[in-house]
Length: 308
Image 1 (tube, rainbow, N blue to C red):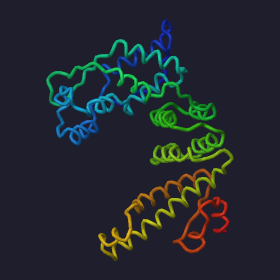
Image 2: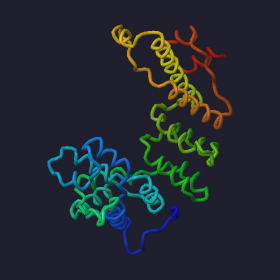
Image 3: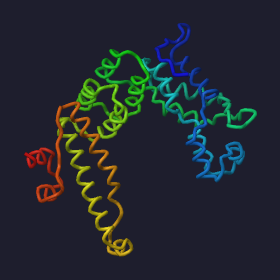
């Protein structure tokens, strides 16, 4: 069944903090999914997919990391949280009180394992409860301008995912970052199959955007950075094809230029965003003196001027 979204207000006889604490306890007790990522970690770290056997070995040095991964709030849980609690305001004091309550009376998790007749039952340790709540970022609120745009849309899973992505961002939310995201949410077609990936990419680079930066110049600057990296990667690949790798390594060459296709993919993402938001983008040719002699501390306006 697909997930049904809708804002359900907390019961009137409960404070939101107390209601959220009970909800989180239920998720830890019954909402834990054993993902393929967990099984992959088990195989890579312990050489087995037998979760019960690993957890029974109290001396295993990596068990704490496994438990943090096991109780990591996955995307489905984050979407449920956003739909149920995303409009509520929680303070750091609320978060601490919830964590203290969970740690004081640890939830008993019941994990359904593939092929097992009975679920695996284990108490959730205090450190896993703490990181579980921290990773949900319950105190995070969207800037009002972005929240207003999303509030005006019909509620759907795509919009909840957008809220989850914005909640998990590490942005300081200065005005220029908010303005660029506002443009993205307004002008980028929400039905585009690249919408979520492009939003995630934009969120990932926005911490580099300083106050006062021109949005278009900022994006073109990122593309120019990827272009230079692409040129270096292609140059390395040409040399590698024409030479012996051992000799190249002895002469000081390092395979540290990244993947050619990855740099091209990042450039295409910038192009999609620039076209949707500004109706244009910039194109770079293979390197010549206009680019390779550009001062490292030059501004992106220098780049655009040299392209003019």
